[in-house]
Image (cartoon, rainbow, N blue to C red):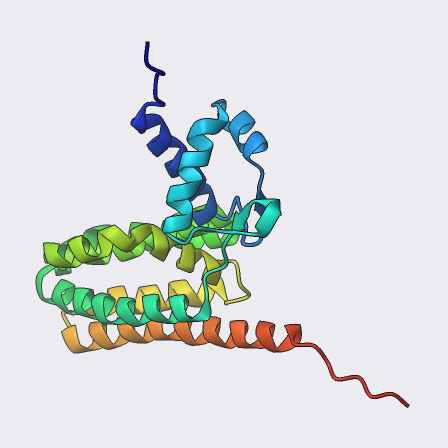
Length: 230
């Protein structure tokens, strides 16, 4: 008799559960992943946990910390800068095309999405804020009527969720995010394609600049101080 292998779909389910917890901030950057604790929480054996962690390491969600195992990885300044540079271009294009093709849908459905986002901000619940932010940007992608944009974003969406989460967990003014969303939507409804593109690009670039500054400050404060003997 041959040993029964762990069903691949179980490994995928475990991988997805851990990945989503990282993206949602339930597992924070720097938090150690204890395999026994995760297995108990998910009610599975350690084997699919080990295999899922290999996938997570390959995609940069977790990193090894020597004999202590693995911990949730903090997105680097280069990753955040790269993701937002790409988003600025794609979001700008999506907003431009949405202003050309999606005015009616924007007018009908947009206000409800804005209201949900502002309510999520008032609640202060991170998961709700992240989901509302994702809902808004995916809505603009759909309004563009350009399936290539969604197809290009889809393979990287979970990494984008993680980076967006880093912004939302920061001290970035959340009300400002939704003020900018409202301005983008207003330009789309007005059919002002150049304005919609400009605002969408500036929205992404603003988040990129803020996170880059924050990471630089964190790196500076972590540098060893020179101590002079008196």
